[in-house]
Image (cartoon, rainbow, N blue to C red):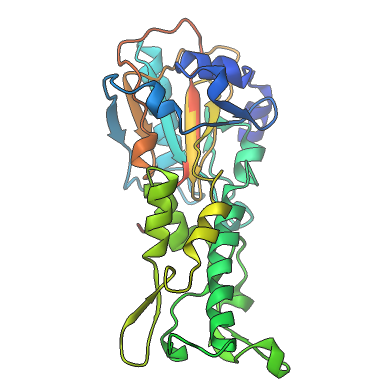
Length: 328
């Protein structure tokens, strides 16, 4: 029996612009990240305004195998099956976190003949969305500590600060830390810690935001601490939301990939998003009949293309975007 890696390497990938074309996405809306991955401009929504909405199928609460084969593999296989019977399909998945990728679970690009490709890119940095979330999240953490150091004009109670830092690897030694050690210029000492990036509230907000303006407003409402009088302190109070949004300006755009049968796949931010390549005997997977997701991708990432479009290609694309953690 061939391994997942062998099957992925034997699959034939279509140029990403061909995958986009079958998904009714003009090449002018693509931002290429190499030959096999592209981001899709948010302007695509205006270009398809007025078209009928696709049907939305959610794959969730699947009990995985001991090594994690569950929702993603099922969703990829379902999308490929729908393509096989002539439906136009778009698969929407979360991006994988490098924590599980380098743990016992491994990658999150599916398994067997139901994988998202190129799975190495998907399981690692892809287009950098996770790193953008990490940077935006930690910028807010840094601004909290800087506010304390600069005199604490908002009268924040240090023990009420709930906003910890994040890192996209499993590192138990950082779960609980003390910051601000050293000289006076190194900040106010306090106890805090690190979570994994996939659990960041910034990632959840990114998956729900419908535009940059909406993202900016949502980030501003993040509550990070309370004052000594019990009033909530938000990212907006710390003047951090604008800078965080700038860091996330490209991460909000969905990523376009494909499956092993070249089914279209869209991914936004989270722990598992991949695009499958085309196998020697591929089945057409298209995007209009519905969107299949194994997690909770951004609602606005669901395609608005016609449900009855036909495709002569034997593969379907996959869009991967950041989405909320599995507990969301």
